[in-house]
Length: 307
Image (tube, rainbow, N blue to C red; front, side, top):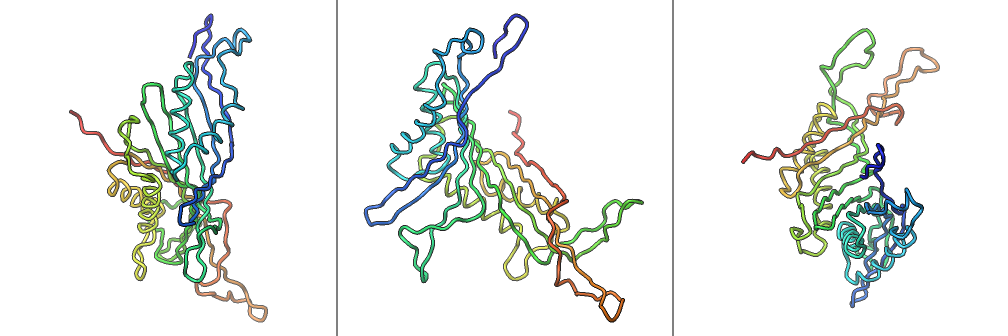
């Protein structure tokens, strides 16, 4: 931020939605594949470009785009979206003297390896649903801030959900129930506790495995055991249990934010043609709705003990 005759200027510039796909081929013929959409934002000392029409300190956004492809080529071993974001951020902060920090955001498209007659295909993939996200910020000193997350994780259970004991007033029409469907589309974001490049785990694909593990904990907590399930008294209570389970399982995650809209499936009961009495469908026919829907969001974080 710069002060200019009573004014303050805060600026950054970058390149958005740079799409790149990378194939890695093992010696045994097995292929690995990733497709990423990348946003780059640079914080840099290029004040003359704004106040004096002098572009000599600007890293062109086209250069940023080409750097993505060049660095993807240089990564000869398969790596996670988090690790590739770090590769890019380290490059921009070390290669350009005027760049003080780089923020790299990546959304990974969910390509999944297919199976043919129970056998994983060596080079065949299908598109899944939920997306793996990450955002990495690195400055010149090697200070790191890294978050990862999930977008578009659509989940539903047909029982073991209810909603009772809420405020009732003259505008309340919703009946209380201990039996309803529960559906949502989870958006999750979690912050890793690593604060410097030197503190990062050295294990290859560590963050890919951690992403899969976090997703598994979220799903297991939402659904419960496969036979008996687990009862949800509200979306809020389930959200809290999911977030608490993640922090309890993974010590290198310092906080997690969950957004879980309540997507409604409304029981349908119709009058018969021959009998105006309402025909009960016994909770097996529903009207799916996604507008309007309830919005539930919360962040759970660790409390740092005072020294």
